[in-house]
Length: 286
Image (cartoon, rainbow, N blue to C red):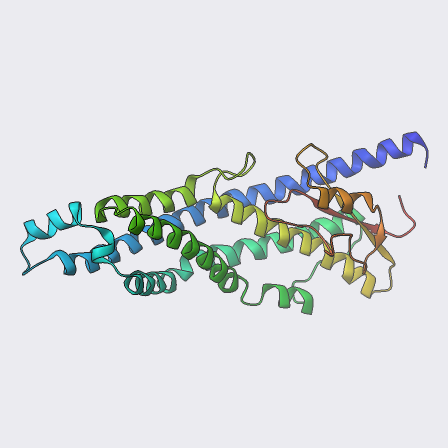
């Protein structure tokens, strides 16, 4: 390949990556907002149910002034046992599943379809990408519910660490309740990385990036099923923040569609918040 051809190829890849990123970012912004609302609602519900339980402990005959003073000054660990908060959290997590799964299912479906359609368009093939193929159906099956289970497990892990600290340091119920609320607000608004606005945004970016790349791959596999020999490559953003894992995948260049990249992945993303894209082409074209 001549230097001019290489330059054009690099420009095309950069343009494709930019177009892919714009499509994913648009869907991710809306999903991130929905997940932020879900985290805040979940946190408010959890604190509300904890307060009910703590109120029973501090009520002492139902005197509202005594109860209020207990909530302000009484130790959280005296009012809420480990079993109490675990049961309250389990009920809260179960009752808020749809707040997360409904927007996730809708957004992932949109990203998967967009990724497949974009891949077909990039290759200049006059066919449609069909989400009814078995690979797409399997990918989407119970997607939101399974993902939310993992989200809730991580939330419980972080709550457990927070409440252990509250018990060890003798925090009051009032201080602990505020810390829990702050924790869920952090899920909605915190900033885990420079390009990630919050845990909610990070989940959106990661899951939609995965779905978009899966759509890319499934579209290429549909062409391969039709007898067209396809190959793929891993494309990073090329900056100093690219992980060694992703850099090695990119360095592998173009590989057969059915092969795995050096990381063992069939396509991006290699890790949470990964910014990489999948490129495919008909073998022998440049």
